[in-house]
Image (tube, rainbow, N blue to C red; front, side):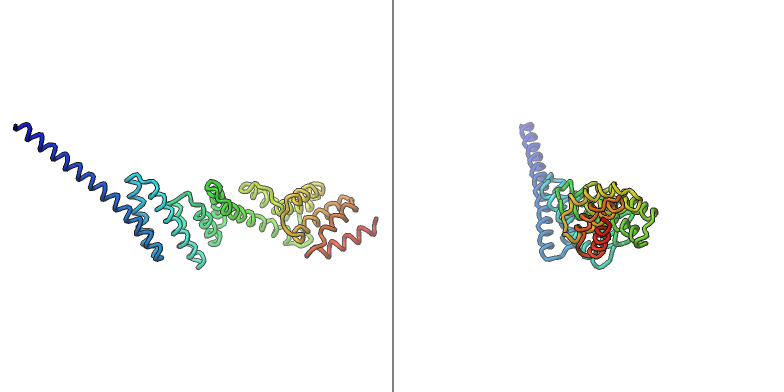
Length: 286
């Protein structure tokens, strides 16, 4: 009889413990879900600091409860909010504040490539270009992994634009008297670009052709100009520069008829007058 009462008491204690554990688990589950819902409400009301606090609590609670979906959603919302807040500060030229938001977004959800791109843009605007270029490269890599082709294109374009600007500046600073030193500087920039962006680009090929012309490598200039034309997708006015640089190379090779044909393709925009001049001059010598 005593054993029976003891066993009964033991069962009561066990049941009570189980009930308490279940109640605690239920309370914990309810708490992180409430935090998640509070985060949604705060975000809807545009109270973003409060929303971030609630979503962070929800993510932590969901992680401890093994709720991967709520954890993922909570972190995703935090990342998006940090991105939006960072963009607002970036537009106001508050670079350090913007960077802090983008870094928080990256730390919370590393799979969101937009924060990487925005961070790189902030670094560039802040003047830290040596840090910004690798940051753009990381943004492109993250975007590719996330199948975000738009962000990937934007990141690669930022890198390409930077190095093309350096090449263009070097090749144009002395007008028609471009030196080999200028060409070498441009070539170095174009080669640096290839370390980050490997896809063929008509503008990159164009500047390679200009470098070849400056260095007296005329056949190489023709070859690269043809490669540029094959992939060019812009207007005839933009494409005129490719015909023009090819015409210059062919003229230097003494292939006047081919040069005339190339210059005819350059009869648009700012190249028109010069192209007409060369067509007339070369035609008179034939």
